[in-house]
Amino acid sequence: MMRFEQTFMNFLLQHQESHNRTYHFLILMDAMISAAKHIQYYYLTGALKGNLGLAGGKNVQGEDVMRMDQIAHEITVHYLKNSGRVIHVVSEESEEIIPINPEGGRYLIYFDPLDGSSNLPHGLPVGFLFGIAKRNLEGPEDGHLRAGKDYIAAGMFVISTGTFTLGLKEAGTWRFHIDETMNFVRPTRMMLPDDPETWELSFNEANRHTYDERVQQWIAEHERKYAFRYLGALAGDFHRILTNGGMFMYPAILNHPNPKKNRPEGKLRLMYEAAVVAFMCREAGGTAVNEAGAPILDIQPEKHHQRTALYVGSKQLVENIAGILREKNRG
Ligand code: AHM
Ligand code: MG
Image 1 (cartoon, rainbow, N blue to C red):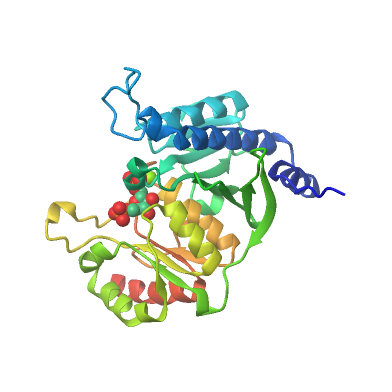
Image 2: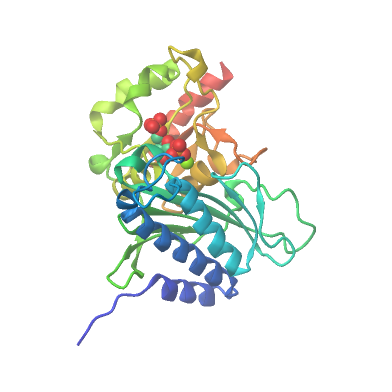
């Protein structure tokens, strides 16, 4: 007798029906999955087509080379448009908010279609990260910029390793793997492990001396207890943290030898990077804070490309450093 895996779409259908929800979200997620698969296969052959280099040149066929992140952006907007369910999107690849279906749409999507640009020219893992909020169905719509706590779902595809992780509001964080038929299958609920045995720390070691002194001191006191891993692509690094526990951090850069390179606001983007992983982390039993030690999910964005520092992972570790960050903020 053959055994078949449960597909993502079947999992989601059951989820929506058991919560008495509409099918609109299924249609939206079908568009996201189509976009992710399309990006995945473009990326896999990207080196051959000359798509992994910088924009501006010509490929071997003499065609204009587009940056892979621009291609990923166009693919995503295409599928989201066709879904008919999206009011507007915020994309890392577009300065402006892009209206899609302002009257008839139901969802607001914040995404980075190809995150981890330093891995791009090597064809190494990158991420497609997204957060989803819903239109205010009860009254007039506002500026559409939602805090992470108001997302209904947030997820990431690790491209091109073929994994997909989705956090659903009050319903857990789930991981899926791509199968031979290009379906994402085998829903597996992710919970951060309590046992520190497997915990890892993940941050850009080259930046260590640019962090606030108290953060540097925290690292010096804790680093020997844990393994250290850093891929340089948030989706990949956070993928590991979700499985193994520990903490990923991208602290504020405050003491760079070239002061122009300081980033007191942090580097990562709030709406489609930090809040996305913070949301999945909360649904997996963890937490996330900014440089002031305040919960990432509570930050009300003032602009769509807002940056933030990020500390995300196992509660015990994040809360420990959050205490120090809050003290620093008071002092
Ligand atoms: P990007 O949007 O330019 O790709 O930058 C975001 C990426 C994250 O994926 C990753 O966690 C971080 O930047 C890595 O930065 P760094 O190269 O400074 O370590
Ligand atoms: Mg990015």
